[in-house]
Length: 516
Image (cartoon, rainbow, N blue to C red; front, side, top):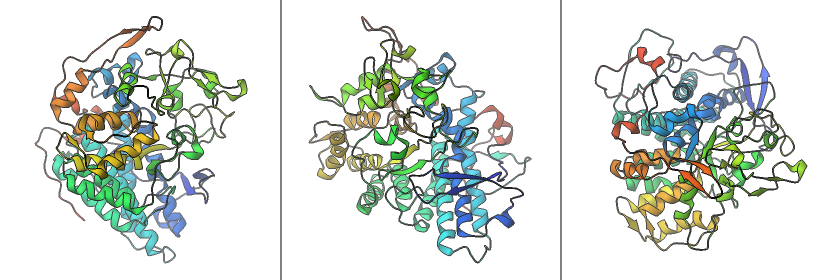
């Protein structure tokens, strides 16, 4: 099972540069690197953890994350992507395997680092850096298992480096997996430094943020509120003034709002260290500077119409034009050699006549180091906006609404940035609607919201979504399609077929016992 039994080897050394204004990663080809001769200094140990900030998760970021938006009803893809829209993803689905492999690759790399820091290290490596790297590894391992348990449910927990291919791994119970996630995040919070606004490496606020989200998922609302409060009170993070900057400009994608992100570098000729997303979002070759753009994923009609759920009469959500390209919308920052780009009336050949603007960078005309499927745009995974909405929801708890002043203020901070009127009360529906827009096409968040929701409520939302296509624009004619049948099993993904021979799926899941 390659994804679980990953043997840790380095073919390249990834080294942080001193300035966030420069490329995050510098590539240096080296020969004969082993654990014994590599980790000699603080810088080398930190470099060993760099893959946790993106490279480990390349296959997950490539197509899997946006496929979760298809499950959620936010996106629609090519015919080959139909299983994600129709809840018929099978064990042989290639994108399914890519997602699974990416998360277990992150776990394998984290386990390797934990093995390294548990052994005697060179005297030149400081205790602070050793603790920091252990904290980073525990954090990323917890992050990976948090995604896996929500998406797949019972899975094997691998907590050490192994190359044994004969072991049949048991499935572990969901509750014990959550206990393991909690333990890793708690230890990470103790070990990590405070962090800085706009810093690339995670600090305590990252561990606190995911503890808050984990407790919210488990309906432990007081703990979720308290950990979100720690992040807020730290004063380290704040909302970006403009929503769009962190999604369209690589130089702005590492900022004070981001708490954990995958950071990519774009070097022509190298593969597996860059962000590939924009090639799947736009079909107009000239916009991203390449012949053969894919344009394989588009916003759904339902997502487009859902903006009406967060706006009052006469309002326009400022996020809208930066999330979705609509026919006739002008973007002066794209195709600058021709004075800008107007999204075509044919919808760029999209089946919904819409395209995503979010995560589209442009071409070399607009930004350096852009090579079609290679951009250095960071992937946002946890933002301060999420913490604010977690905080508001935790205060609301199981109630249908809240007028708590601190919860309402957190909620309204998001609305103010979007140019929307403030609310005096939050309802569960308004919070769901706000999260859907704020985090559209972002780390599968709306699907994960549906997964943690009351099952019947989630099913009702999905059955009410129009997952159809657009036949004509004038008049605007939608060929509607609705999911009629959905059951509890549809909220979990199947384990990829390539992994099944290494996992004991025939026996009941057992509790994982934390070893450290």
